[in-house]
Length: 453
Image (cartoon, rainbow, N blue to C red):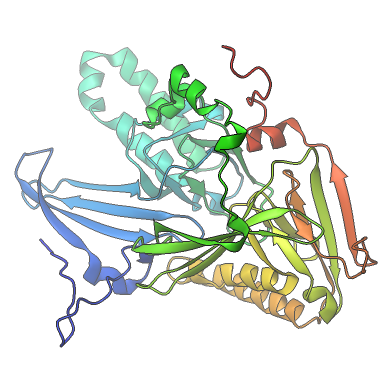
């Protein structure tokens, strides 16, 4: 069993701990933890190997591998090490080509998978979380159905024949005789299916988020407060009980964990006003262990009555210097590059247009393709990054689109009166039902909330 001991310097001081979750690489073999555990097949002692790691553009996971030297039994699992997301995720993939069968799939214990064309459904918690492929999901289902088929053909020949027919239908999926769909739903929001065209959008891959029901929250161990507690929390505060501190001149600190390595650190928070806009909360975190830095902006006001869409034509250095307040609900797009960045890829931040483009560039620095992708995928991303670099050098004129259904995003105008200039277009639009569902507004009760629903 491997034990991790904090390093000490010559003076006896304890050095800063190493990051717990690091990017996937071949140098992580020294971080594997080995634990003796019982084999569920022969009940002898085997070895479980644990590797905490990060999947770029996704989240932290723990990879587990068990092997029994006595009977040869093996088992591989993946468990999410990140927190439960605010919303569940629903992913639909149209499988049309052999390359679609090789798409990587990360699924947690709380995910369900279905293939409507063959009436296949793998319910929640029927299988452990894993890192696999579309073909691997089908192959594992075939292996599960084939188990004990020889005995079943003797005792229950009719049922065995039906299972054989169904296994053949699954094998036809692998041969792609007809296209089919893979539907993945995860109530914890910690699953995803690879987009090989990243950072461009994939017409075959559709991702949406949904609000969990009370039963789904309880399945995850999230329980709502009872009615009496809700009434206590919703009780209005008397005017003489209002806090008297002026938070605009204060920098507050609170303890948190580094989002990169999970080491303890502190986050600084300050309330400020953006001219011509509204009140916002700026937060900054610097990790003393791994040096990771984050800057995040949260809206200090409520959700606007309409969504907002900014279109910025970037043709000069002045356009790159525009101030931008991007909220955590704002998505980005560059139509000329066929590029879409969802609201969860970049957190809320107060920066410039150039700073926003640089942050998008850093998200696409190729780490996702260092280990497992084929050479064609690496070259495709490299060509895209070279084009992106030319955009930053103003060798190409592009349009940056910022769309925020909550209406809490702001882009500075180059005019003194803050009215839109020639290279800036501002559109207000009514949110759709899906937008309101994403923001949690459909189930929100703002009037007579003290009454029982």
